[in-house]
Structure formats: structure tokens, C-alpha cells
Image 1 (cartoon, rainbow, N blue to C red):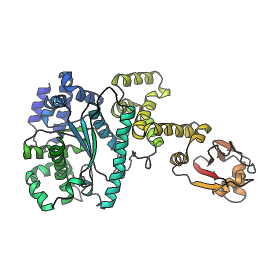
Image 2 (tube, helix red, strand yellow):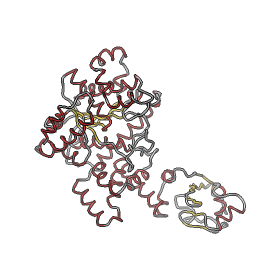
Image 3 (cartoon, rainbow, N blue to C red):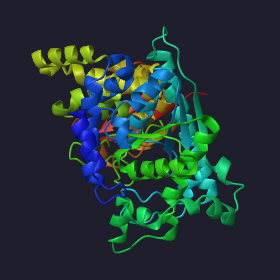
Image 4 (cartoon, helix red, strand yellow):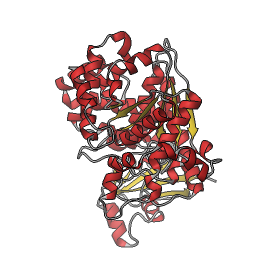
Length: 480
């Protein structure tokens, strides 16, 4: 069957007219071959295929013996690129990082390449219009944020998920600006440009879709595939990198890199793609779609990340456990069996949320997410007392935060008025009397009651004030 699939691939045009057909054939061929080949040659790829982490491969013979044999021949170098178009990556990027982590766990070396240069050009893949040009200082700031995020995730994986009996491969975080900043544009086009053919470049799906749009495509965006192809070539020359990992929307760029390297030196290299992460409605998750769940704490708190995975639909939780965690497949199946026996406990959802939060934010981040969950959804006063100022502000991101001097004789209504939580005059007094005010999850209906330590003021000096169902106010009491 695999041979039949491979023959089908061979009859498909190499230059993009039938990319969709090729993708489907490659995916089927990869899965078929990995399941029937010797385990000695395909353990890693077979495992990633079973988990659903791998979707497509390029070129066609990667679905046969070459790539599995290459991985078994010794430690290889794998790279994935991330353009710093924002100051944080998001859940849509996380699967590519997890792909790198699987390769590193198997002893291969991984490169995370930040596109300090290519971010200023803009990848047209999946875009309906050209992004605005980013100033160099914004790209630099974004690069710092993403570098910190990637390094944190790799560190957390090594601390909490890595089998200590297995030798890890190395990890390097690079910036492609370092090899473009000294290039002269004429020299670059003279050296690299001559290896690209307009017909092939025009046939790419990302180019075709943009050329048919009302805005068309600028020369800047059109050259993006040239720069990404050269990135692969550079990493191949300097680091011996033969494998590129990317999202399925990057297949055209992966093809460009393969073709460029083959033309320049005749060397065989490979591209692997991971599936795109979508919402329950089927929309791609990311900054462009406006539904990004970020990986940096200042944009999406550990609590919010935890809740995102906890709230996944039942139908998708098994797939997400395979994709986003490192749990053995047998353990995933046991979890799903327990969930089917008692769906109300949501054991699979809780394990998924915990595993991802610990990978992204570490053990402390997971504990913070659980404290916030208990404080908000289980009305736990103890959880409120254990929360830091930062956690409270993360949990109630839109809530006003006030630092007030604790004065003798301060009453409930005094506190409410000092943070403008209620109207002045009789109406505000009436709201408290009628029980519209809650302090630290307890309803209060006595406006003139003095604030009592350990009841109205927690041991950490905080008061959580709620008026109505959703109007929160955080008070930090200061003493002289």
C-alpha cells in the first residue's frame, strides 16, 4: 500500500498545482509506512504519527525509508522557525515546540530560529492582506519575549517531563537577523536569487490565494519564501540541519527550502509539518484570528491557560492529550476510560490542563492556576489568602486595584465608597443593605459594620470586593 501511495505522489506535479493532493498522499503514505516498517528504524516517527503530532512530510521519499533511517543513524539536527510578530507565542505555536521537544527527548539536536529579519518582511501564508511593517525596535522587543518563552518551556520540559535515563539532545535559540544583517541586497539576490524559478514561486498556494485577492501581493511578501529557504540552507551549512518542522500552512515554504538546498549542493533534506490548532468552531488559533491564548504570563495568566484546556469540548480532549502532553498513549487511554465511567469528574480535562500549564509555566504556575480556580469557582477563602497581589490582578484582570490606608473605624460602606464601587448617597447605602455587596466571597448587608481582620481583611492584607455578579474590586490595605 505504501508503495502505491508513493507512486501516486510521484505523478503529482512538483511545482504546486496539486499540492493538496500531494499533502493527502504524503500523510497517508507516512502513516502507512511507519506502521509497517521495522520498529528499529521508525520508533520516533511512528510514535509522533500515532499521537497525531505529525501531519505531512516532504519530499515523497521521506514517507519511505530515508528519513526513519537517517534518524536512526545518529543524532540529527531539527529546526523550526518563529517570526516575532508579537511579544509572545501562543497555543497555536505550542504544538511545533512540542514537536521539537519530542525530537530532543529522542537525542536529536533542535534549533528554534527567531525571525528577527523575516518578521520585517511578513509571511503571506494564511493571510488575506499584508501586515503593516514592523519597526526594528518592536521586532527586537518581540524577539526577547519569545526567546524567554521558548527557553522557559524547554527548561520546564527538562525539569518535569524528561526521562532522566535518556540523553537529551542540545537546544539552541537563534535569530536569523544574525546572518542577514551584513548581507548586501545585490549580493544576496546574485547568490541566492538565481536558484529560484518564478513559475515555481508563483504556483505556491500562499502566493496564488493572495494574487487572487483584492489587495494582491507586494514584492516584499513574495520574497518571503526565498528568505525562509535560505534560512534552511544556512542552518544546513552551519549546523548540519537536515529536517525542518513547521505548521501545515508552511508546507510551501518547506518545499522551497528543500528545492534550494538540492539545487545548491544536491543534499537531501526533509520537511515535516504539525497540524494547525483550531478552536472548537474550527477557526485557526492565533494573533491574526484574534483568539490567541498566549504563552507569556503577562498576556495570558496560568489560570487562563489552565481554564482554556479545562474547557475543551469532551469530543476533543483525547486528541489534545495526545498532542499537547507527553503522557504515554496507554495512560491516555486509561484516563479516557475513567472519564467515560464518570464524566462528571472531568479527569481527562483536568489532567490535560495541568500538564500543559506545568509545561508552559512550571510547577509554580500550575499551583497558581489551581489557587485561582479554587478562589474564583469554589469560593475558597483560604485560596484567596494564599494568593499574591499579582495573582489577584491576573485573576481579575479587568478589576480595579486600589491601595488604601487602613484608618481606624473604617466600615463596609466606607470601603465601598473609597473605591467607587457604589453610588454616593442613599442608593449606595441601600445596595449594601439589600445584600448586593460581597466581601471575600461572603455576602454582607450591614453598611455600618467595622472591617474585621481575617474576615473582611485577609491575612495577606487583601480584600476582594464584589458588587452584583461581575463587578470586582481588589483592595490592598496599607498600615502606617
